[in-house]
Image 1 (cartoon, one colour):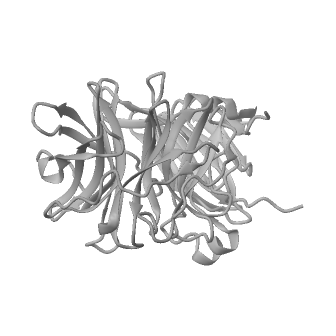
Image 2 (image 1 turned 30 degrees about the horizontal axis):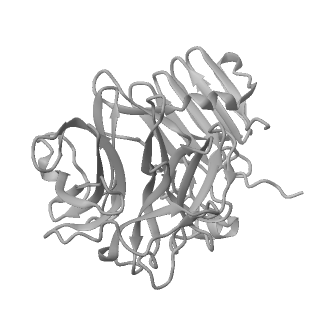
Length: 423
């Protein structure tokens, strides 16, 4: 019998093999949840980007589906089918994505729309819904997202300028023919004292949460060494009075405080929640080598589904989706506030103070700690910690053969094994 990979997730979404990055095409249709993702099925390295596809009846049990999108030589997506979304349109579902004609040349990226054919598979188009825009000073335009505001469907894309990130806005009433309106927001618009990092903003997500507009942008800056990148959540309002809608920023917060979450995608559900998935790459701190990744045959996984919220003081935070309570299995013994376990998937929730460490005899390596209340989910090498007032921290942690998890809590607490329920 093959020994399970100790670093692989038991209940998170990952590709069956190869490389996974940004979550894409998230939605609910045909009675199931659907999550797609950028995928190289041929090797656990970045490149040759397809869209992988998984679906679930309950956000707990995931099944791999047929590949959704595939690069087609000699077409507008020959260089890859990159980030985008799923959207209900005309009684069915369409996939709206960045189609790159020439690999490595972001100037050949445009918005493409794929629709389902009679056999249920996605039919990729022969023309762009929005070609790469010719806007002076604007570069790296990509990653379409759609939002309906006062009955009008708008499309947005991330971009960069010499002065920082930007988000373009389009009229997308006709999903197959977008009309550029202007810029929704640029870094120069952000008020003094509000952080606006990054030379390029990508994967923009614009959603209404707790009576506030929230704009999520993933950003990077390659002008420094090492490269800086992260995810910023902006709160603000939409100004619809001009020719182009404008997002007026009030405040910003990091969406996640760890080093291992990027490119989140948001979905407004029928019950009014905003669910978010992010990409968790193999750790950037060198604790997992390229040779180890190649031997494992896979790289990257998606975070758990999270619910987006805005706190009373205006911070944008996430918490585990309500449905994840269905993963809780048998309790783990937290006698005296201490737990040592080698379970591959488990959770702990404490009213006050959590310290998470790896132990091997007298050797102790602290992984994460807080003085306040928290919930921590562990699945293979993925650690997701949630604090009600501060938000999430996502880390990849690779246990050595002799190491076990140790948890110490200061307040009331409970811990459980996490198991995917049987059908």
